[in-house]
Image (cartoon, rainbow, N blue to C red; front, side):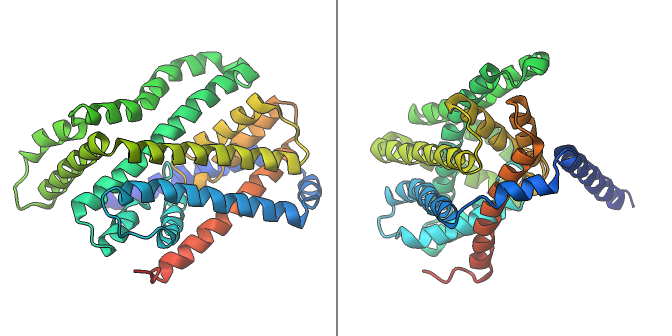
Length: 331
């Protein structure tokens, strides 16, 4: 009975949080104004946003493919785009900070003959370089948020969160540097735990896979520096594409933000997906209402922008789920 009550209470808590965020975001947003903003969009503008998203997903796949290609030259690029779309869909609709599709990426590489260790190591490096680029731009974005004046009424709260955020942002580059110099932080943490479980047990085998994968990723950092830098460049270009797409959305909705303001508002978008809600539902809308209200724009404009982003994500996620449901019959 206790086990049944805990999931129920937990789900009830998240539903209450979701309802609160949506209520706060929509309470001052007239539906007529929202519709008037969205109906100004031209078909060519939607086509331009779609084309830019295709480029962004090609760059996301390129980062992963370059990491894989360094060790397995036979893996083709185009089929990985479909698998990456399916992985995005799983991550997008999974509660948490945009993770959940990584097992599918591992299974994908197994289909091309990679061992479990190499497949996990390639996905591990892909996420590490993704986090490195994300945290770099989020750090710049947080500076833009502070300078934009959005947090003038919450400087104390920001000061309390600056230190843990700084530690979080420092993790990817420090981890990559450690592996490049022959250190293995995850392995050092996993070995003491591994000795507590029987060698035949699933937890022992999982920890062993983590250790072997980190060592494989470390060899990639030391021996494939050019490939790693190319993958990092693809990750940075991905962020540049997302910034350009967000700026286009603002322009199409007649919201003239300058460069730092655009970066600050986009930073709040990305932070909203850290909320433990599927697709950041409610958190995204609240973040845009907060950001644009701080810059002097009405709630209707913020909700219009949020709906445009939702439409994009649901289209991409829907295609990804369709591909995942069909098993992406590409080998």
